Image (cartoon, rainbow, N blue to C red; front, side, top):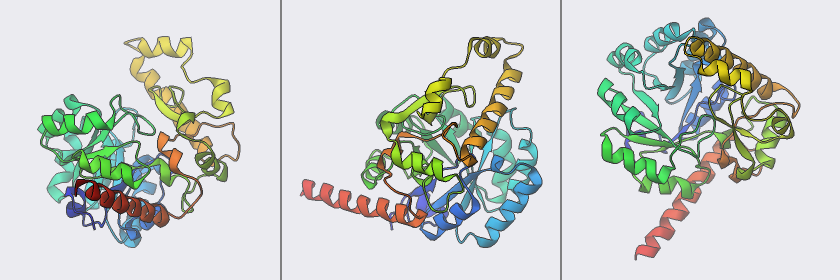
Length: 328
């Protein structure tokens, strides 16, 4: 057992969060994550309606033998946000992890019931903002993250956040080995949010082709694309991605920059991107867009969730012992 703020707060064996992945994370994955000694997280938008979302949480509370997290998108593109917050506040204790530093409403609604609110941040400004609003911890999204990555490497971002705010820091991005986990903890992180390595698991609901791509491609095959959501997002550079390109076209770009239309264009782009990724997650073809981060470099076969967790911890223990030997 590795003791950190993350393990102590949520009573889990290892300081790992299975990161929320749009249309990849599933209840079964979260249940298996809890059995393996970590905590899983799932986006609320993986359910199409608030009613389906509530039923999904009920199932998790019944079957998941450990804590789990709900990821909320806190911006105007999420038309179900208010209902999702109400549902989250109703089913405590549940850990909530969401994108956006505009966290006041979530904190005000959920914390009085004992819920921990942990916010994604990419720099000191966002970290200090959510700290002032009363967040419980921050997830430091670095440049190695899958999906919407931050601009700064973990080796810089973690110490920077530790120096400039007082919240526990959980790193997100680039960790696919136990050595990487040890490195993050050594930098001052309280744990790691890991997503991409869990895409190619037996419990993952995505297509066999998506899983095969995670196994077959590596770090050098990850590119940034604005096609998915309007903001840079890491995707696997398949032949289809090469064909359609990774940048918005001129019309999309101009509309996005128009002050009057920007909000509506972003909402439309985000919706289009969601549908694109939805097709990618379940279609049996390479003519799709598959989100993943560079940590797929360390995935060589499709395995159960527990096997990946066990390997990460085994590698961590070996790396820790080797480091101790160097100090002696």
